[in-house]
Image (cartoon, rainbow, N blue to C red; front, side):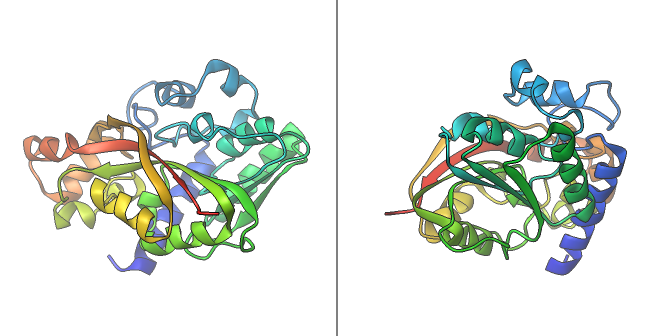
Length: 274
C-alpha cells in the first residue's frame, strides 16, 4: 500500500476503536473474541494496578505492547512528549511523575483519539497535559523543547520510520532521552501480510526487522541505543485476531504461525548527544 493509503487505513481503524472505547489490538484477546478487558491487557504488558487506578477511566484502551513510562526514569519538572498518545494512558502516567512543574504533550493523528484524550484530561483535571493533532513524521512541536520522548506500539504504524525518528531527534533537547515500546520482527514478512489492512491496524504489517529498527534509531543521530527488554508477541494479539489477517493474506494458518513466532515486543532506550 502507498503511504497515504496506510495512514488513511490506520486513522480510520483507530477512530473506530476510539468510538467503541475498547481495544482490538493488544497482547491478549479483548473485543477480538475473548473476554479480557483493557485492564487485563495492560497488566499483561507491565502496568500495575496502582497505575491503572490512578488515571481517568476512559484513558486505557488496551492498545500498548509495553509500559514506556515505567522505563523512562521520568523526573519532576521534565517535559515529556508521547508519540501516538491515543486516549492518553501514558500521558497521564507521565504527568503524575513530572508533577505540576512538568508538562506532558500527546500527539496523535486521529481526531477522535485526540478528542477522547482531551475529555479524559478534563475529567481527571490534568492541568499539565495537552493533546495535539498531528503526524509523527511532522511533529507539531518546537525544536529542542522536550526532555523525554515516549511511544507505545505506534512507530510500527508509521510508513516513514526514518523521518519519525529524525523528528523525534529534532524536538528533544540535547541530552534528551527516548524510550519506546514497539513491535518488530525477526523474519521478513511476506507481501500479503505487509499489504493486509487488518495487519496494519493490528500492529503487524508495518513492523520492520529488529536490526533495521535499531539502525534507523542510530541513523537519526541517537547514541547509547540499547534494547532494554524484548518478549515474543503472538499473532493472536493482533487486531481482530489471526482470522482476519489469515483471510487477507491467503496464507495457511500453519504457515502464518511461523511468522507469528518471529514477532517481538521490544523496548528501546536512546539519548540525543549533548
